Length: 313
Image 1: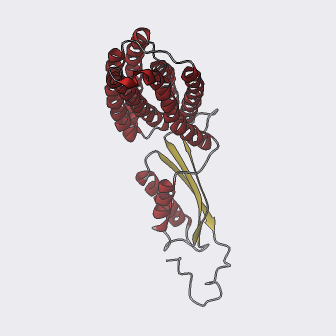
Image 2: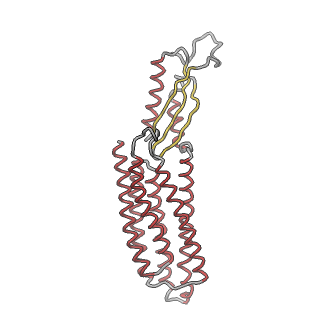
C-alpha cells in the first residue's frame, strides 16, 4: 500500500511537470504573437507552476524517506513547505500583474490577432482541466497535501485561462460594433479578474500550509474519526486524557493516554492499548498512533462503593 502511494505521488509530479512544460511553450508563443497582458499573467503563473513541479518532484522523493535520528517523525513537512512557497509566489504574481493592469487601464493598447489568443487559451483550458482531474485523482490515492495543492493549482489555472478566453471572445464580438473603442480595456480588466482568481485561493492554501507547519491539529473530520475509534473502548477503560494530533505531509500522528484500573494485569492493559493503536491506523490512512497506559488514581465515584470497579472484568 505504501509503495502504491509513493508511485501515485511520483506519477502526479511527472504529470505536473510535463503539463507545465507544454503550457509554458504554448503560452510563450501566444504572448509573442498576441502581446496580451492577460496572457503574460497566465504565462507567469505557468512559470511558477513549472518551477513548483520540479520542486514537487524533488520534495516527493525527500518526503518518502523513512524517519531517522535527525528527523524522528520523517520528512513529510517538506510537502507543506512546497505548498506554502507555491501560494506565496502566486500571490506575488497576482499583485504585480494587477498593478500592471491598472497602469494599462490608464494607458490602453490594442490586442493583436485576438483569434490566436482565443485559440491558445482554449488549449490551455483543456490541458489544465484534464491535468487537474488526473492529479487530484492521484492525490486522493496518496493523501499528499503537496499533490493536492498542485491539482488545485491546475484547476485554478484552467479557470484563469477560461476567463482570458472569454475576454478574447468578447473582444472578437465587439470589434465590428460601435463599442470597438472600449475593447482596449478588456485585456487589463481580464488581468484584474485573473489576479482576484489567484489571490483568494492562494492565500487560503498558504494559510493552510503554515498552520500545518506550526503543528496544528488534524482536520475536523480526522478528529471526529479519532473520537469515534476511542469511543469503542469507553466500556473497557476509565477515560482518555491528553489526546493530541498533528500532521506531517500526508502522515497523521495521534497520541493519547488511556486510564485503566490498577487491578488490571499488564498483558491485558497492553492488549487494550495495542488494539486502540491498530484501530486508529486501520481507519485513518497514513496514521501513526501512540497510546500510553496510565493506572487510575482510584479517586473516581466508584471507589467508595462495595462493588468492584465496573471497568475491571
